[in-house]
Amino acid sequence: MDLKNISLEECLKLLKKKKISSKELTAFYLKEAEANKDLNAYISLNSDNAIKSAEESDKRISTNTSRPLEGIPIAIKDLFCTKDISTTAASKMLNDFKPTYESTVTQNLWDAGAILLGKTNLDEFAMGSSNETSFFGASINPWSKDNKKYVPGGSSGGSAAAVSGNIAIAATGTDTGGSIRQPASYCGIVGLKPTYGRCSRWGIVSFASSLDQAGPMTKTVNDAALMLDVMAGYDKKDSTSANLEKTNFYKNLKNNKKLRIGIPKQYKNDQLNDEIIKLWDLGIEYFKKNNCEIVEIDLPHTEYALATYYIISSAEASSNLARYDGIRYGLRNNSENINDLYEQTRSDGFGEEVKRRIMIGTYVLSAGYYDAYYLKAQKVRSKIINDFKKAFEKVDIIFTPTAPSDAFEEGSKIDDPIQMYLNDVFTVPVSLAGLPAISIPMGLSSNDLPLGFQIIGKSFDEDSVLSAAKIIEENANFKKEVG
Ligand code: GLN
Image 1: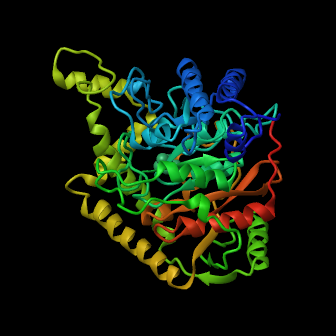
Image 2: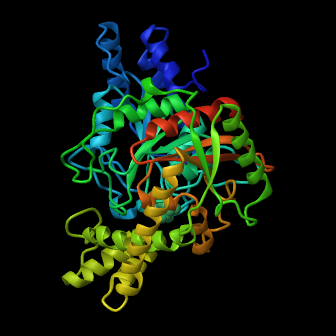
């Protein structure tokens, strides 16, 4: 049996029919994770506990008391707090941090019978687009060639590399400005950022609280739906969590919805490279073939989205990261007096990119600049939200590239923050508007690297997003030929 390329959906069937045990499956993935350490996809593995949990799942399966994800080993981005298990946010600051509580999303997964394989690598505090800002070193894109190392994207690069490199069946990610979608595109997998408020943020290390959202990273669209059904749900511990009925995305998934597809004219410009435009047109043909209507739409404030995002997310980050003072959490560099202790702990504990964000954030929030930057960014954010509202009067979903390029080589952008931030040009407008969006692999670039496309939906209409993704998935028939 080919356990390596298996989807979550197939695993559930095999487990149910007792063709395989959860213990075998979990042991297989732990072994593969060890054997592929060069991907640096995991920061830590949960080997002993995972096997114990798998044995318990096998007992449940044999007594027909299975839960929805019973016995499925999954990877968790190391930004989700896991009780008594190291949670680092890929920062020196939290290198020795073991939370005393569990995040709601991971608790939902364990309550549904999933098993923690390990915690995956990321950009430090989820700030980055390449996984290179991790204190534990960059994770590697499994599509890398012998002589060239490509980044897996970021910040959820470890999760994307783990799923793409077949060392996890599925994984969780978080997305503040594109961190699920962009690495999914670079690694040739499916990545879904749900509507803001769909999944609880409780117990996820905060980056920018008005944008952060958890979501699944999987091999197929069906798997994303299966994962999201478990991860989502109201949580009274998160005041921004939406109190909605229990979801059933997997059951509702259709591939024949007659959707109106919006193509934003601002995104299709001559700066975009030809191979992306060609694939985009191909995707449009797939939708037409499925009786969908194509409509040109206008998102006039898109050009301000990147600047708006980096002002707002950095402002929120500077405030959220004030808690790492050497007293309450993680690293402490002792000193003669309290001010020195703060200074030395924060200088030593945070990496360069995190310090850059804190500095941008404190600057745009400072008395003299608040109106010019932070307040203005909030006003532009409202305009971006309105652009989408207007567009969605005419269409059901919006179809765009996920990123302006395929994966880039390690080291090629890390010294140029502006180039790095430009990766997020198609993903941040969606984040600012809090909308659901998926990245779905479409094909390969001339470098033989995956290219993903983004499908954006109305607030809380993940059903249409998943259905449209299914149309692309079935037509593109993207085959993973990695490794
Ligand atoms: N690349 C973006 C940033 O660095 C997005 C990060 C994220 O979504 N967590 O802010």
